[in-house]
Length: 190
Image 1 (cartoon, helix red, strand yellow):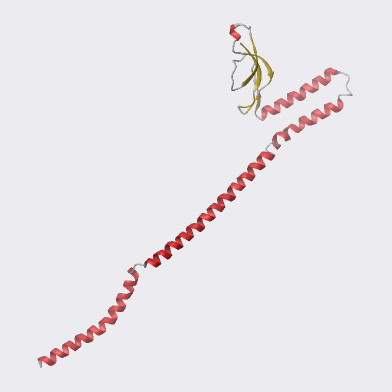
Image 2 (image 1 turned 120 degrees about the vertical axis):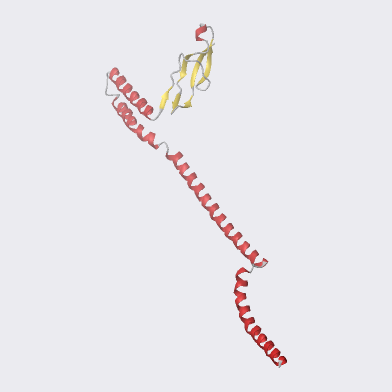
């Protein structure tokens, strides 16, 4: 009877093992799949996909930068082409005054009146330029400065206190917003 009991126990254990095995396998399979590491081929495919995405992003960025560069160059060209329009627009009233003076010059016999009118136009012109930031350099009597002046002549034989100073201005120099746009052509005492 001990043999029969032993056989029955073995059969029951085998049945339990057989019953548990499919459940254990099915229970372990999802857990193994979740923690299962990708194969090298899968890793390579994923990395190639990332590389392709990065290349696409780079192409978009390069194209975006190229468009930005072209737009800035176009805007700069437009500024250069039309940048002077503001100054020219402000100069138009002076051009009108000069044309009126020219038309009426023959009608006036009084030269003093023509001279006065012309002086008014010139004053108006220089006031307008000053509003735009243009300043005429005052150079006579100032020490020579190569950053502001261009010496085109030297004059020897002057008193020592005048040595190295500007004694005459042949052509006026101008600054625009504190930047020299034309150097004053001067004579300097030796």
